Image (cartoon, rainbow, N blue to C red; front, side, top):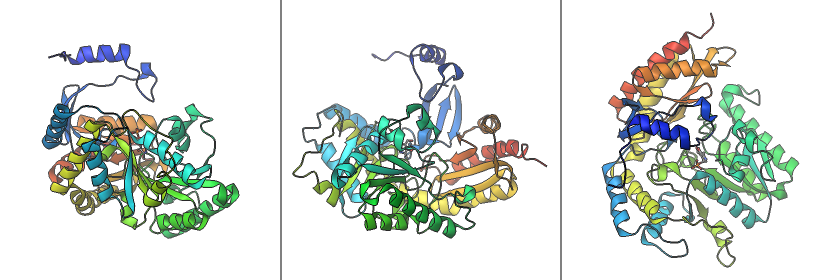
Length: 441
Ligand code: PLP
């Protein structure tokens, strides 16, 4: 084999010396080697864990799905690469199956290597289609780390890239637990958020705004469920002012919420959908934009001024074709929905009753967050150091948790069984016991 066998010590040594890791001071981190993974379990530094992270919430289908691995191997033997200017069978088929699970009237796909590039191209399309310049994006959002996408991003990770691209304006989306609108019910929060958005649109010049981009359900920044009526209201504002709606479904799409796209839960049809992650569970890098027929129409007789050497890469597209087919065959979308309704939601709400540190439980499908607080009335977040101790307790009991701010996100592979979930929850309870110890009084 051309591939050498490295033990974990050698992996760590070369990693330290040669690999620059994202979002980190290199001297502050010590990334643990992952050597194998299967289903919902991964081996980290020699120990097996049940994975409640799906890496970066992308391994929806689970690790090393034998049929997906076989399809990738098969395509590797057929054709490894071809330029985007050629047509390719697997690219054609991937676009067809993605359009098929997308809302009606969305039939064309532009392929990218991941989510950030998908959002870059989505806003480019919106600007060209409308002839307008500004883009509205939410605070408490993450849209990727390329220059435009990080400018769209509404959380502190954008600070290191400021001033960013021109024309991006942020607004507040609904988040009842820490309401920017002093609301007391979901309905009130949704209404006030829409009123605020309308005011931002008017103040920015409704005829200057090309698009509003939002995560259908905010992911990394807290699994924030939009109140019923909010997304419909956003769609109506967009229609009133000729603004395009871009749904960032990079994290929420492809089974994660128990639908092919989270926006289906609210029967709202956007103009553009960006996707990545779950489309092929990250087995090969892939993302893209799904265009409405109207937006695609803008690029029929006028050139689309954008491209990527690996746009529609055959290996990535073959893995998407196989992945969607496995999701259908195994009913993974339905499983995610059922598990969320019947098992995960009830169990997490039960934990919230039993543990004083759990301030709120939010989510749907296999996409949940527990917000941990030291004072349930003041809703004081646990500190980073306290969250590290919570994480350590979970790991000590055999579960790898997803920690974001003061939250534990419950985002295992969507194929997780009830038994595996129960096993992970037992470890989570060790973490919550530690969190309870930080609650005052
Ligand atoms: N959009 C959302 C909602 C995401 O969660 C992410 C990644 O976490 C991205 C975009 C960026 O995707 P990528 O890291 O593939 O560029």
